[in-house]
Image (cartoon, rainbow, N blue to C red):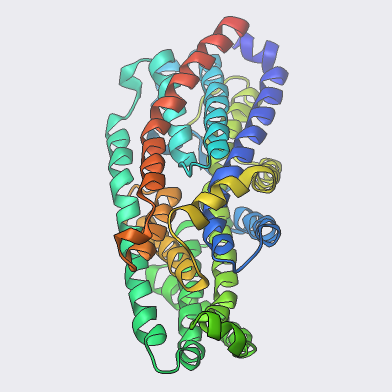
Length: 421
């Protein structure tokens, strides 16, 4: 307790700096995953992606991000063993933030799309093993995370493949693909509005004291989907046939018709990401602030003040703007060649998988889903359309994420313990 009162201000300043660093990493890596398909398909530019992310990540965080976050990430560790030594939890959370942030920076620099959730989980496990003991870790949860390396990309990939095949059958293989694109386009836009509003209803409105039943959620999502479909129809109707471009590429005009849909999906993914994952990076920050403010009380949950969400939002947008292009290039161009139709399928598949996971409790990662969805779209054209070397590197980076975060966090934990203890 004395250490908390003596160094409280220093701990808070460190937590804010490390929290900003961590959310910068989320922007450089995670948000780039959400935007990569839209940028890679040529539907929007990197600058437009940053503007969309800035607006919709913030909106997602404020409208649908929780005001209370489980600071001990998803029941990964039991902090009761160190309730009498709250400074150990402070060291651990600071170490976890710094470790996860450094790993995200390395991964982003290499262009590897890794899971920010798994980075912070690995870091927290590392500190828990080093500072509390093996028994403090919920190893069943770690097993679920390992299983998600297979489950996430598989579900995302299958949905993307089915969507791509439906577009091929209904639009691309028709006698007049452009007319078909205008006919079926609003239906595909409806799917975007419907799925993303379902994500929000299922996952994100608890802190606004809005609890909806499953039936109410579906009705609200249906209405929102129809409104978005109507707006989408107006935008698609403004797209004209480009005969010159069609001579070079038979489906050029069809792809142009899908650009408005990609803009919807980019906004949707940014909003869904903001509502679900912004608190990932600032959970440990909230834990440190809570312990210092309470004078050393260790709680499983801590209030998440608006200024911390704001801090997270700023870090994320700066991260995307400064280094996000590397991961966007991997997702958008290196795994397989994307066009607006393919990018649309991959993004919608990723959003759909998030909905399924949030309702069924499947342990999934947005990053892994996005990669799997892009692979599914590529598979629609055969295995040769995928760059297996790039995919191999990505899978290795996923496996390394947990131990990398854990080892770094254990090292930083002992450094902080030595400095302040």
